[in-house]
Length: 390
Ligand code: RFL
Ligand code: PHB
Image (cartoon, rainbow, N blue to C red; front, side, top):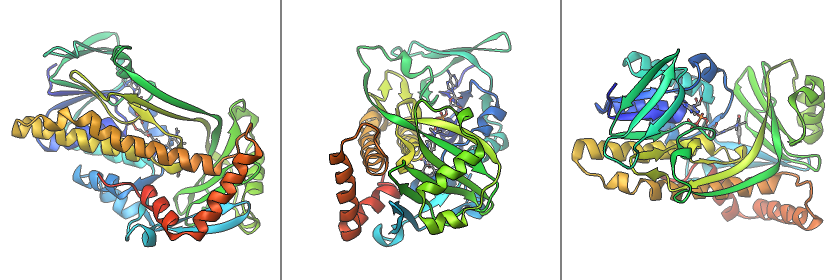
């Protein structure tokens, strides 16, 4: 098979880029290791910044998000049982975020690819990029026992944190920066009305908790757990009890509980790979960087990568201008690191650190006290949460 851009990974980054390029007449093939059903069963992000929403519109995929997504103009931080509202709208010059699940985003992107007869090859095993520093790169794979090969101009690694693309950058070229947190998030999805219309990020001595949602009848909750905990250790009842303990009394009192539809533990980790380009390979999204979910930056930062790469590829093909591709890594990383900084800040501010001395706890307290006393601090929080410009 021959295409212009071979995209490894059919998650949100890969699908969005493929769809945007298709609309500009640029040909892509997407190779995805899992089945479509598997990809669509993953429960992940819930909060989209306006920049991401704009990209979805540009890709012709914004209609259902406009109808079913909920615009949020604020969120709460609960500090040891006391609720404070962070007014995003007021502090970011009228900006807001959209609550619309990544699962739905991915479903809409698949539907759009289908409408345009886009090529997405599922259950592609042993995907391997070749000759990335030459003029004729190609990608090999196996599907149902058959060998496949895609010849292309460029390869995009959008295959997530555990993908193969980043590994094909030589060790002496790749620089890796990593921070592993000593806890994870246990997440529960339940068909219950959300306890709050606006998200609640809760700091508590027993550990962090988050009340989020997907729709007026679908709730998503998380609690901080030790890395040694397994999902099997947590019955639904134990989860609800622990969540209630970490929330303000009035919130806990109105929490509607029910059976979990999904329950999983995600470890918290920060990671950046540099550079994001090697020869004719470009990394995008979780393949190049991940953040702890506290700041809701992961998918949104994948979106800014896709934006820079999309415009770089369009300028290359339609205007014979390769400067956007040359500058891709530098531009994307500048924004990536700001998202890293913000995610680290919010994670450090709101979690209980098992080995942390009292000094750190005092710093959390004073940081929050400062936040509630300072318009400038709230503006900074809001500006980062709604997404920095790109
Ligand atoms: P993905 O979604 O991991 O997709 C990569 C795809 O590549 C496939 N793949 C391969 N394909 C071919 N060959 C291989 N060798 C392959 N290896 C892997 C995989 O099967 C998969 O389909 O990466 P992508 O597209 O870059 O998207 C990134 C986002 O998924 C991620 O950043 C967010 O989910 C992070 N995140 C959040 N981000 C936000 O912006 N807002 C949020 O509110 C938010 N909440 C979250 C989150 C992530 C979470 N978890 C589970 C870590 C909440 C949680 C709990
Ligand atoms: C979610 O709804 O899954 C969610 C929301 C906000 C976050 C992280 C996850 O910061």
